[in-house]
Length: 519
View 1 (cartoon, helix red, strand yellow):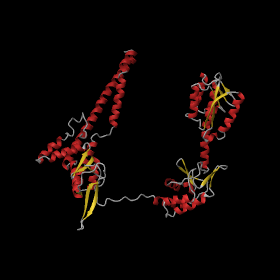
View 2 (cartoon, one colour):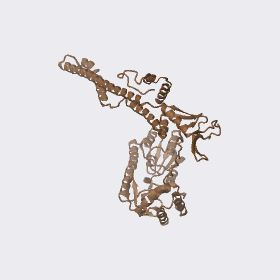
View 3 (cartoon, helix red, strand yellow):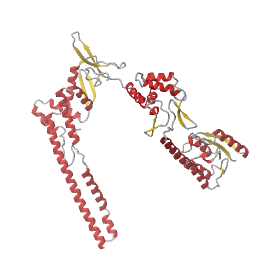
View 4 (cartoon, helix red, strand yellow):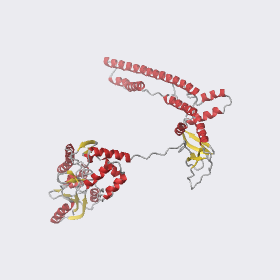
């Protein structure tokens, strides 16, 4: 017994406006079912384009057919079922396997015994129709743009004329919005006041008629449509519609919009140098600063914990003067500075490494070239021997084939070495100069730069018991350990071996291992 599923579809896109609506399809298909005396199990309706796969109702219908709930489809036309090859191929496969025993339309019936080529041609024609329609629509849009006709939804104050397919001024909203825009161009109104005035005038957005939000008002004020132009794919075109304001008024609107949307100026630190810099060692909350004026007229800056952790509580109740806090900052910066004398010595060593690296690189290139010349010579001798008939083809292949990959590899290595311009010791040079820069910051007592320097080279800046502790990142932690060790030396002359043994900078031969930063 043949059991039918009725399937009706109407695309939600513009290309199917001329097709019968779902209600009209249902009326016609039910009449066909009554005349033919067929058994209809269920009716499926869907408003979705069949240009691509992924229709949920259609997929559900096919799944139920595979489960045996029905074995035939009743649709208005074959293109209502599929307009793409993915869905079309699935339907053809089910028809050939007998899972679908019949597809009936108002003009034709498709059976498993029919020529599948004709069904494929009809589905292909439906697919090509959609593709051609898309091309035609895009061509029509380009032509409308060339004529200066905006093709989208009319902005606020205008409406889409359905007969002429143009955008015309709205008889009520156009003069209201024009008056509001001209008032905003004076620069005496804010976005909020303009938004409220638009709401009072009935200038609302959307189908529900809700009040425009501030961002929508801002986008409206930026729209060049109101002075007679519009954007298409990022290109500005002159429109043929009636402008709401002149270009001069629109420029004044832009200046007013920028002036009222300037961000508020941030409050200065007012002498508090180390705000948002360290955290409390007791409760891990931020260290803040405050000013105190004495009766004598002296002004002092103090730093303390913000005490914002109400659950855990903070055991620290001490204040520290800004001068003492600055000394702690200076002390930590000195831990990760490189003295001037050692900067020069390290840079001299870096130059030696650069020269050694350049020499090693050139020697490696020459070695590769020597090996390449030897391989080319072997290949040439093998070619001559094969040409003379000294060796046969099998022996020639056996001897020559291993040489070709070696030749290609050597050539690529030579090209890579000749093209490389990276200086492997350049990061070390930059680090030495940066470490020496900290000493200049300390000597000039530039606390603003010292604060930024510590934020860059250290994490977890914790203030506890009048002491600032910084967790330095690599390789700055090694430099800090070395500085502490050097400062504990009683005799200044003993500093030199400690500095030079500091990771030995490059303990191995430069032609084997490139110099690296201390880790």
